[in-house]
Length: 134
Image 1 (cartoon, rainbow, N blue to C red):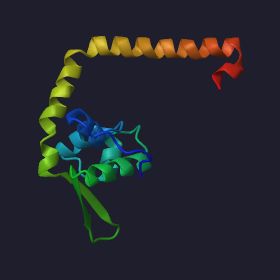
Image 2 (cartoon, rainbow, N blue to C red; image 1 turned 90 degrees about the vertical axis):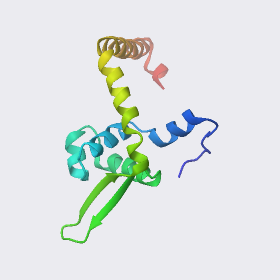
Image 3 (cartoon, rainbow, N blue to C red; image 1 turned 60 degrees about the vertical axis):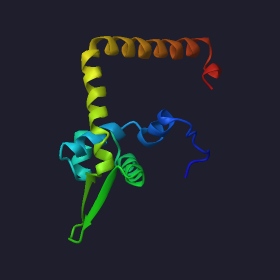
Image 4 (cartoon, helix red, strand yellow; image 1 turned 45 degrees about the vertical axis):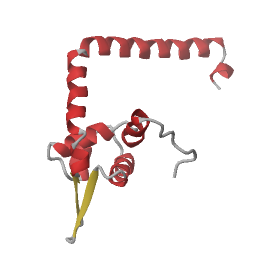
């Protein structure tokens, strides 16, 4: 449960609310491509923890973008599929991916530059005194 009421004043607020989460766009894309089981998704996105993957899948399910099917077998088998509503996001996700591909050199450069600047700020603060890091 969130502690604050989300701002839902415009389409961007609404989209942000349902897609907010580091892995959600990738999860939707991989489900679209046929990766249906949580273990398969975790192999495709190795940096995501099982807990975070489950939380984000649950949120996507709550927002009616994916459906979860539990098969009555031992061990239990779970699969996720895009809903018709979830499928409407795929062209947008594809466009964002193409934009990223088209601008990958510039994006890499600015991201690495920003990360390096952030590390420099941390190192400088530490040199000035560890109490500044708190």
